[in-house]
Image 1 (cartoon, rainbow, N blue to C red):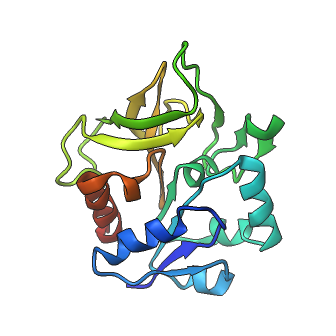
Image 2: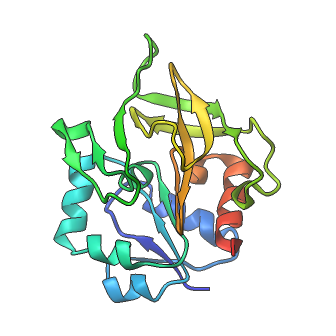
Length: 197
């Protein structure tokens, strides 16, 4: 299986790569469009700001490439938020528009932002991404902005307010948490994504 990790210059590239390698696969880190389009799976990690990641995608002409990709793609953290139509971060910025929804600052109701640490994830349906993962399993989060609950939400979490922890539209998947930092359950989720039909 050919697995590509999008080279977004973010600090978790290596940890995502190592997590995939521990599952017995050998991913390639690249921002080359032809390499991306020929992949069987693409993982889109993200740490940073909405502005910085959109600038990166524009610089390497990756917006059309991502939208053309027809096999499973997994966005992690900011890589999930990029799937939205608009983010309120960075004074407001247009995103990829794959999912018609806005990303907004968490209404944390006095809780410290960013939301950092382990939190329960509530699974809505029996979804193949959660094979061998129990409902209310804890995953590791680092974020201040989030997707609202919507028609493409397949799991949620709560930090001051309920928000989408996992989304899916067609071949595009997104997780707000960091599976590469989430121990066994994170590894299992990555395995499930790579094996999803």
